[in-house]
Image 1 (tube, rainbow, N blue to C red):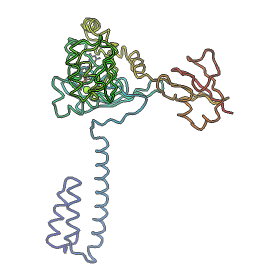
Image 2 (image 1 turned 90 degrees about the vertical axis):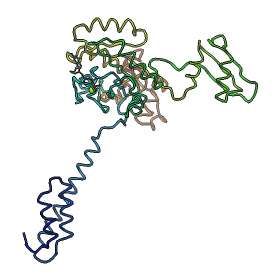
Image 3 (image 1 turned 45 degrees about the horizontal axis):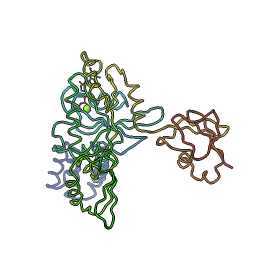
Image 4 (image 1 turned 90 degrees about the horizontal axis):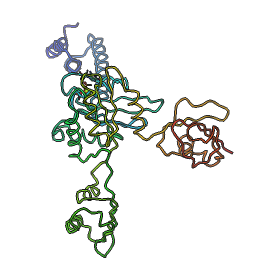
Length: 386
Ligand SMILES: Nc1nc2c(ncn2[C@@H]2O[C@H](COP(=O)(O)OP(=O)(O)OP(=O)(O)O)[C@@H](O)[C@H]2O)c(=O)[nH]1
Ligand SMILES: [Mg+2]
């Protein structure tokens, strides 16, 4: 090392020798380069320092990018054929279940609040990729916690809600807490928006159709409508409703989600009794699937149920005279031949002749069908163009 660097540069050099982190090293090299006197004798050192600086800066940038990518976040981009969110109290077995279903590596712990950010995995259900998201646990009053709003918007955004109920402890208080917390945030499971139609008119006051179905005081209803600036309208009530139902029907912020219950830890002694209690109370409102992530019992049935709950189908294509595609096209239930063509090659719609269908929706293998033919899960379709 040349001795004639200058006093300030010597200090910077000492700093560099003692620097522990990459950031500290960068700072020290920058200081050293700025302070050192430059002459023929320091040229080599200057070159080395600049090279080292560039390498350190690059490493720091790369680490930053990696951290940003893997930083925990509540913003989960939807992927695959549909998204199911696992919602339960802490320790109910969500992480282990997610890992078993998808091969994810979420942390499992026998202590509360192991998962603090959503964990994501993909369940490959015969080529239909189902995104499973573990929500951090719900608890009494969680909406008021720092992550409360993000937690509920995660749930609101999912296609299906799977309540995870721990069978090693009493199930009913768990469900009560989950439903209470969700409904406080206007997330309603396996319920329909009350069936009321309101058509504003220019005049004529409020015209009530189906008024006998309204269970309440009509004056109160008129006052409520007036408070919403609805004074001239046809209000069509199509099912028995209370004033609360009408308020809910008109509440744009309410969301209504399809849901099922996953009864976890079915291997634990006493779980059969808890399962019976759970079924007695909730069987009519929710499909219930008992599982054990420890023994993997019930996981196949559950995967089937998750797929069905998403209302999607898998359709395979087959080139005339060729092989069947090994990856299915995933479509919404009710999709037609037209939807398949739109997905794979819309230009074929113009010279579409017919399609041959093999599988559940065909009356017989190779049935010739048109664009409006409704497909079913597992169909194979061969498109013929003129
Ligand atoms: N016996 C048994 N134990 C289980 C089963 N599933 C999970 N556990 C145990 O239950 C505890 C909690 O499991 P987790 O998967 O971390 O629970 P979680 O719902 O993700 O918990 P949080 O992240 O805190 O919400 C762990 O000790 C697991 O080993 C199961 O099927 N059977
Ligand atoms: Mg967890």
